[in-house]
Image 1 (cartoon, rainbow, N blue to C red):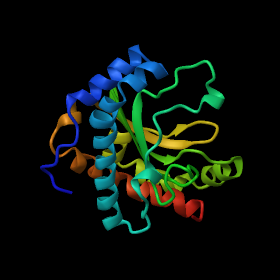
Image 2 (cartoon, rainbow, N blue to C red; image 1 turned 60 degrees about the vertical axis):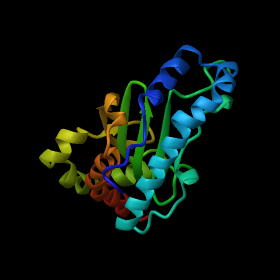
Image 3 (cartoon, helix red, strand yellow; image 1 turned 30 degrees about the vertical axis):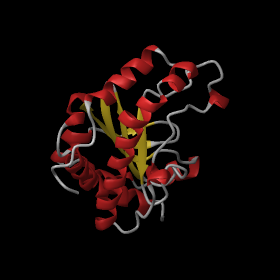
Image 4 (cartoon, helix red, strand yellow; image 1 turned 135 degrees about the horizontal axis):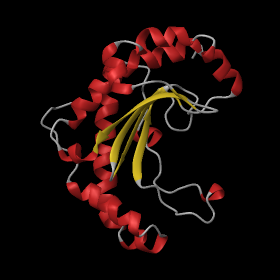
Length: 202
């Protein structure tokens, strides 16, 4: 990736700030062209370049942008009376992409308040969680290193996920070289992701 690349403008943040105040279908349809130009296109271009760089270093990650990027629409089957749109764009970079969240991977989330980077296992079954719990010492060998710990902190556990994450101030979103920054985070995360995959025999 070129270090001179600039993907986003502050209009990306402004769109999500406005969406937070107007989270309904009518407003979104009216502003869909702004969404496409200021949010969707730059985010997809950013993820596309990330995937190219990551694939160069890890050929097992051979997916398309559409395999990685989540929809902005919420699943209304589980949100019938809630707001229809997420207040961020997100993508899961792994060898299987967003449809297989049991595959350990690298998650990006960009909204109006922060940029989230997470890594690990995002949707595992009980047997898989137990399998990892029995071998967490292999992960901790990597995650207790000072640089990793100061960046990603401690392991976050839920009933079906085991992840590390960090939040970055969103005001850097229009910086030149954002791609290189994210690639640095991915390089830091790769040994941990690979260890999770080895434990799960993926």
